[in-house]
Image 1: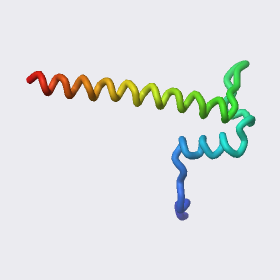
Image 2 (image 1 turned 90 degrees about the vertical axis):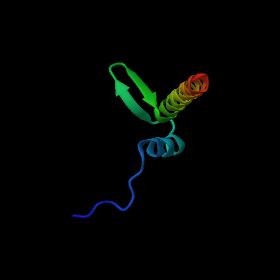
Image 3 (image 1 turned 45 degrees about the vertical axis):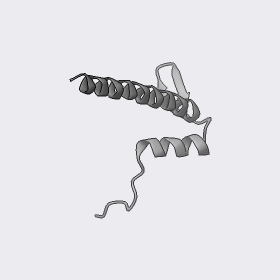
Length: 68
């Protein structure tokens, strides 16, 4: 049994689905659901927030090293 030649990363698969079927339901929990477009938008906001936090950590690390 062989493995597939290409395995998409989750964020790539999400981006593809958001582009090809943005209004299709991606996640359904209880009475709430998110479309692929909504899920992609939330994912993008989370990624931006995490990158911003990482930048703050990096600056603090540089300041700590400079103070030594």
